Image (cartoon, rainbow, N blue to C red; front, side, top):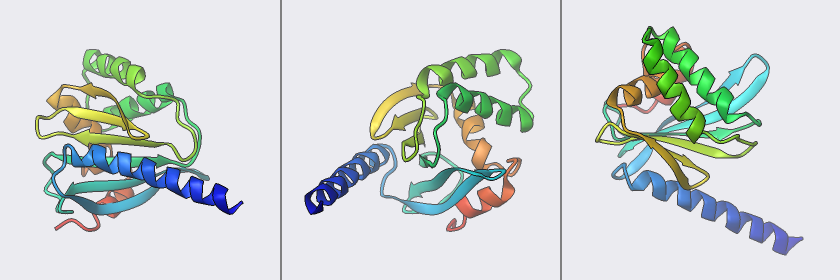
Length: 171
């Protein structure tokens, strides 16, 4: 049993190291700005952690948002919810939303409890997605990058308390 627990902790450390490396590739000296748990009605959905250079948030890329899922979800549902949140913030361009939904549906995997999905906003205004330590796709569109991360970080977010927790350590 002890060997099993040691192996499990080593595997967990390796997964964390891979995830940290993915963020470090894009965000210089990444440090946590804040963290929050997103719940929908009675269900905990994911824990989120926002990283920025030296933990200093200025609203400009590069930065990363790490989501650790607490329940199983379909990738297509994650993409649909993302589009719904962009609409709530006032984006009305149906063609653009349909294009982005299709791109996200191709990129986002079905997630299981404890899976980690990271969105990284690069300084080139590209969004890179990392799933359990592996890069799974990019969307090279500055408008998408802004709108996608605005879901959590904009003053227009549908979850202002969640945003406040993510930006808790902002300078």
